[in-house]
Image (cartoon, rainbow, N blue to C red; front, side, top):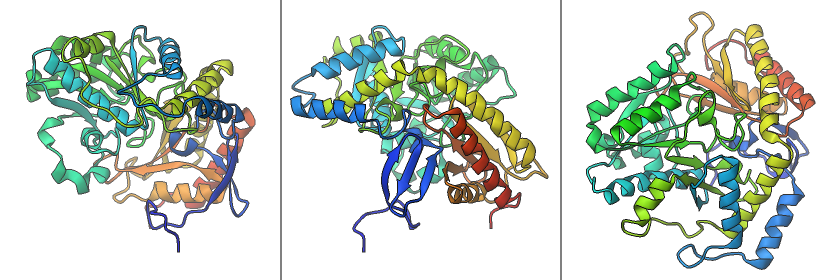
Length: 434
């Protein structure tokens, strides 16, 4: 009997090694990591350069507490990250995971308004569907019914007004303008922030608004004195073919940018937020401290991993690679859509791509979810790992498959991935879940 608390009752193979875009289990089965785990392994597996950087940092300085010290590696990384993201003057707050990072952003937005003398601002406008993390605050901000349902009694729902998800049939300006109605209904003087994923991840695979959306969102937020939080945990660090997905199609600078996953690319737990100078200065010139913290915030070894990962991303031009390989993969997915009628849409940016699955007769989601799980299971039999999901339509209905291999994937490996997915779609057919 295992003493591991598994995430579900399904059977888990034991992974023993990984290199490049492949993972191998204890039975010798190799899998092409078509989802980078949960879109984490941006630079691929088995990079000894990152391991060496972490080992060197452990030997020099393994841990200090953020209330007592900074560290050389943290100072260096924060400066490099601000340059890479073109966020001059922004301050990096480092934590261990995306949930912690979004939790930090929510609390920072609240404290910012308190320091400004507007303690009545506490609400955070979010979208449906969306996913911002598993901790209670981040989950409360999420518009993902299945993951929130059991914890709903712990959430003050009036603190989290919801905005509809992006509508590709609207122009970016028209789509963003719907935020104004939500703010007016909530009472703009009570709203601290608006948070969104520039390209949606787990809750509605690779859904993105039209160009101009985020710039107009930022304009509305400024007009109402609301902070704009871009949740780039999944979409950032080059995955969408740009350092920040919020800047695809338009120039915009949010007040807070939340990062994770690709920061250390799975080599160590690392996430964080970038705070605009005005936000940092308001807090530090007010009470003089962010009233929040985690034991492992800014952990030197994790930050050393992040610095080494950033070296690789820049040296190997992986942002450009994501754009080029993403175009290849999206073109292949669109070809699969033409071959398999249960694929209703293929979409996304860079190497954050998704398939929307459903009933080819109606062009809508099946009444019961399950098709995405079946396709993912069939793909796994073909040696391809994907990221299935459901509930994008109404919290229950709506099957989709998220795809996001490492940014280092080759032309030939993209072709292998498409062939495996083609076979999996052929195997599962067009029927509803059984």
